[in-house]
Length: 228
Ligand code: CA
Image (cartoon, rainbow, N blue to C red; front, side, top):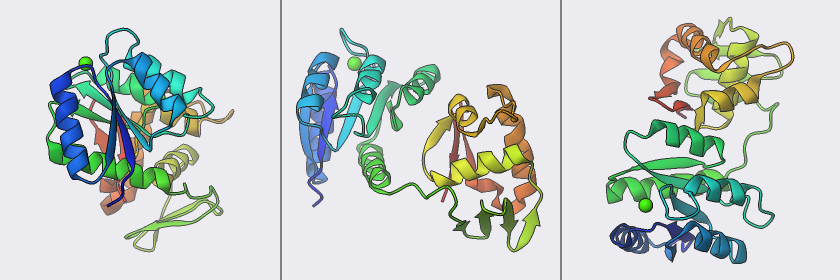
């Protein structure tokens, strides 16, 4: 049993109860907060291994909790998984841009909850590949030193921006990025990339990647994710 600590921030007692029961059964230690203020106090005093954060809280909003934690000396590294209402895509985008790592939409199955917590804890323990390191997943190879991408050994002629987007996503497999986050990650002085043009670059990228295109997953209403 891992025994990692999850701080559950949720004002609705029955949901908190369900989350506690589910995660405790899966071997996690669970602490609870019923408001954003309490969450901040607890997370700062004793940073958990993961924060499960409802966005709709009385008082301090979950997005503010997110931002404040990301600016906090002791708790900035704590992975945050948001709980959001289904259909509130703009909340998800805002949360990811405020520093959350992933999200779960309500109502959720306990299976999804456990799987998501486990995945985020695993990812947060992994080092992101150094920028210069070559990446190979299945038939797809990315060599950032030579700016080369091959699928099944055959070279893909990517534009500089397509390359940067692919490389950025592939260095963070499993993570969801919003268009704005992708733009910020790949934009150079000579790369005038905008939120909207990310979609166009992704279309071009997928076309050129052929059978490896399925690695770039569209997360509807939110952004993109690379599948390892
Ligand atoms: Ca709530």
